[in-house]
Length: 189
Image 1: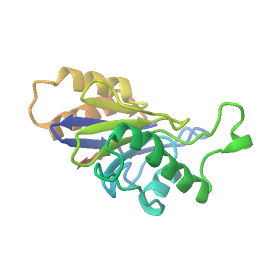
Image 2: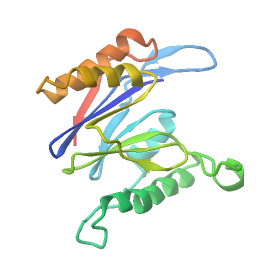
Image 3: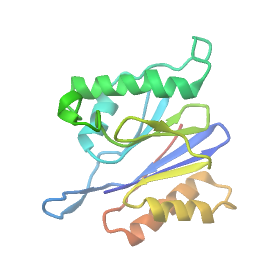
Image 4: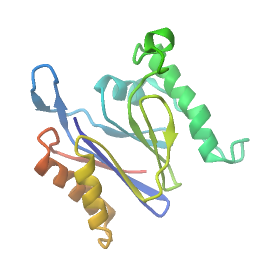
């Protein structure tokens, strides 16, 4: 349970996340000091699902470097091949996710992450089955606060301060979704 928000402005992406951690078994909702959004290499990462998944990406993963001059002029192709494979390898190496026959007939399973690629203004989302998508609007949200955050981002399009819009989206989600709470972390990629 969480809310991750991404907003593209020019060639920058503003990525924000809340601080709630919930336990489905007990129903507890706690405030954590572990960020759900962070920079690693040339990427901004925002995660929902498991904190373990986020910790692997933040501390145990060496992401591939995107260089348009090194054979991957197409960022879409790079994200859907080299990037995905590097995430899967990190998860497998550190015991996260389900792969092969353990994943069942639906295929490999990981978790949902929002990815901002430095200096491109592009926002991608990697879903549980490792497919990578890019939406046709300049913002994205994930987690239990997704719908409220998306509504906030849509309705604040005339506000010119991107950090303010991201904060407002997170605050709106926290106001109406009990599993979203501050403090909020906002980074620029």
